[in-house]
Length: 154
Image 1 (cartoon, rainbow, N blue to C red):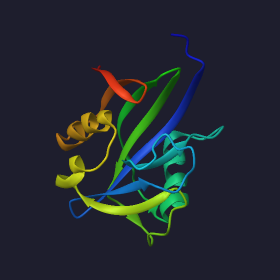
Image 2 (spheres, helix red, strand yellow; image 1 turned 60 degrees about the horizontal axis):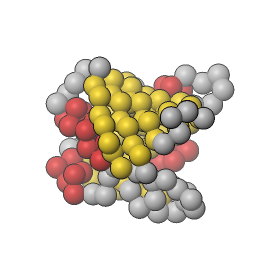
Image 3 (tube, rainbow, N blue to C red; image 1 turned 30 degrees about the horizontal axis):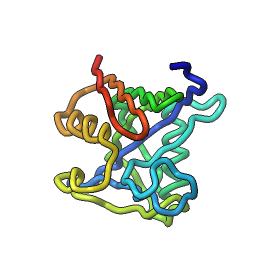
């Protein structure tokens, strides 16, 4: 398989009172994440560090100011002809008021309910690692036609 595209992204799960802030992707057209629950985040812009990116994306998508996002992992998503390298963060230190998101509905979801939501299969893998309090991990998730066919952990 020839890779035609590589992207750098960030992903963050803001935590509060045993809940994660989740984005239910319902508003964007032609969205690979349509109707799924995901974290907040987005593409790293030119000259931006991953931490600068997740702080910017959090403010744009949620209205929240992340104080000390914690880098928890590097996830390599191999999706058909694209390799996406995503810096995974969690954050418990934030301020601000939750605002409306143009990409979907923001919801605080109890951690024990996460696996009941429509998620990508690979997300379940890294949620388990987050729950186990792994200090840092590297994970590869390989998808073909939106189906998880392989996971690898460094």
